Image 1 (cartoon, rainbow, N blue to C red):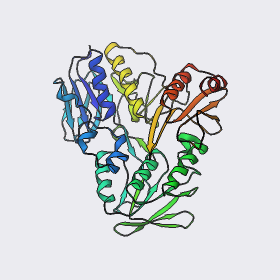
Image 2 (spheres, rainbow, N blue to C red):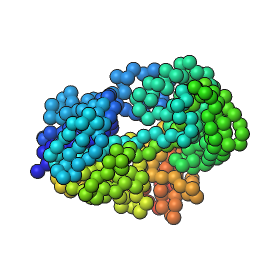
Image 3 (cartoon, rainbow, N blue to C red):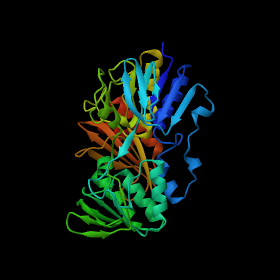
Image 4 (cartoon, rainbow, N blue to C red):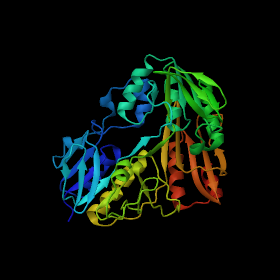
Length: 402
């Protein structure tokens, strides 16, 4: 019988795990440990409404499970330093221990990737946490020229937000177009066009060599010799799974594997008795994809929580075979993606055109529908997600949806 459950990580994945465990009927004790001092909050607005509209922090906050669930204990601002496997337990940074746990769910998320230079210079930011967003918002208030390093989702959202605040914005990326990994080069260039219309400048196909400045950053030096003046720099070059605490301390006797995330089966089980992982820190087996990709998506964390809760409470759960879903808001554009877009995929655009703010693009590979991108096309995009899961052929999907 599972009675005491420890959840490591108090963000979206951790909170949704607690809620899913209760829905599945778990009535025992749940202890949630998080390294941030804040109760669970929503991260997507950090790069948008929190910066542009100066949202109050209370608007970011999720309904806190502890307020209505006395059987759940929240220990915030307390990083976990080690995982004990026999008997199952957790050691916290303050030296306290949670002992005799029946299950542990690891939901520590990911941390922002950093460049190997510029350490110690003021004015260089990453954006992953509420603390990051607070610092960035304060610094933006006294800045005029912003350089964004990285043209992925977070970089492009920050670029749009800074431009909406009236700042001079330059985006740098070694790839030939923004959002290439998520949208492909053609749609990536479509987004770049909208940013250029708003006044965002780009230096694409070139990397960053170093940052200029003594105590504070004053410029960004590119690999081609260009020097971009900057009052503030935001580095948005992706994230890495927050598993350092496991790798550093080791887990003696455990069969936990860490390879671009904590390796799990298709239900979140790590292979070590009683230990599960989900969200950005976990890499699950995928029944349809032998590469077993790790998805850093809001929707993925929510859906995985239901699977893990069912596996813990009932002892079994169906294999999770997700079709990824992610969205981004930039200026007035609402862009949503289902499935995956890869280099060389066939693409068809319909229900509008690339010149419009409202269209649907389908992507196919080896004769199957593998991805779709919708610009303000939520209903048709939801249909694509279902059809990808069903294995629909690309030609059939084009005929049915376009």
